[in-house]
Amino acid sequence: MTSISDLTEVGIRARRRVALRLLPFVFLVYVVNYIDRVNVSFANLRMSADLGFSDRVYGLGVGLFYVSYVLFEIPGAIVVERWSASKWIARIMISWGLVTILTSIVHTAGQFYMARFFLGLAEASFFPGMIVYLTHWFRLRERSRAIACLYAGLPAASLVGSPLAGWLLGVHWWSLAGWRWLFILEGIPAIVLGIVTIFYLTDRPSQARWLPEDERDWLVSQLQAELQAKKKIRDYTILEAFCDRRILWLIAAWFFALSGALGSIYWIPTFVKRLSGLSDRTVTSMLLIPAVMGIAGMLINGWHSDKTAERQWHTAIPLLAAGVMFALLIPARHHAPLAIMCLLLGSGFLYAFYPVFWSMPTVLLSESAAAATFGLINSIGQLGGFAGPYGIGFLNDRTHSLSASFGFIALLYIAAASLTAILKIRDPLATQRKP
Image (tube, rainbow, N blue to C red; front, top):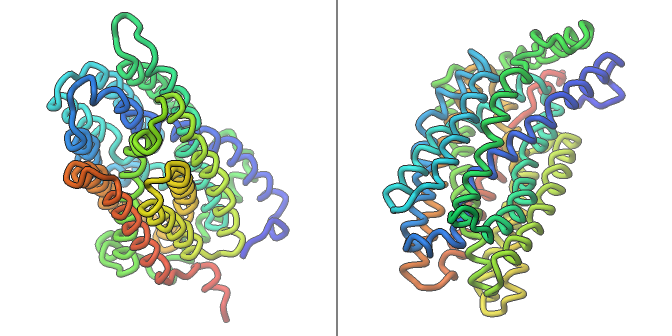
């Protein structure tokens, strides 16, 4: 495993310069992305009551985002690999910002369904595109940490979005309800950042005028050496990558994990409010707890995974811990403080698995096969964004209790943990060094 001491002075400078240039920006972009994607969960503290939506209507509307989201995952990721990350990501951001603003004018279930469907269409391929983009700049030994910096935007979005939503839900400017202002004001930053992206992001190291020539040459040669090492083990075509047993297991694990995670994310404000009966402002403030846990868990778990070059257990353990917490919610649901503690801890533990999970397919694949496979894994997994929220809404309506939903989420996390725990993925550079 390459350590800091093994790097040349040029390599150390190049890694630092690239990280400082790119990681804060991709972090910021993902914060804005996730605020716009899940702001409907906070809006629902008032929206469904104002518009007369049942839990099933809300769950279906949330889920429709993911139906359209999956349509362009694979081709969009290939566009980033073969054409331009900066232009494609900018297109995505500007279009999702516009759709988010337009969501503020919905009045009927049909309009809500349409807004969510078009938001998914606008955002399609954003996440796998960002993963592909990071593989253009970061070596295998730094990749979990780089992806962790991207993914830290997810809990950070809660740190920003939760108190902002709590405040906006209480306003009533120009006779518009606060939840409508939530969509308007949170859609604008995406449009602004989309325009900035065109000029700020550089597609590949070879095009980076902001890197000194020796650092640029070092980074290009390092990434090329990794590419050749992967190809010596196996040079996958797109179809071969899609049929690889390990990729199929990763798809199944990601689907189970996202079914639980997205179900939880879109329902957690409602869960906390129904368990506690607290005010909207207090509910949104309590959701800062898993967000803080998530940022720390992602960064520490990603760093330790890179240090030890171990992936599957760094993925499986956070999933298992989250599953146990949601399982404990069932007997604890009548004791509000204990139930809320389990809910917040389970939500916080989960975050740590994300960056390490996405480092696993980057170890196996490269170039167009990697881009297409990232899109495939995420597109099928994102169908869990339909199954999870809708399944919870259905169970809530059918059982008139939250217990079935908590059990559903727990089983999904435990299933995902089991699949990732049995995966065997070899580091191509470590394999190449063996005599």
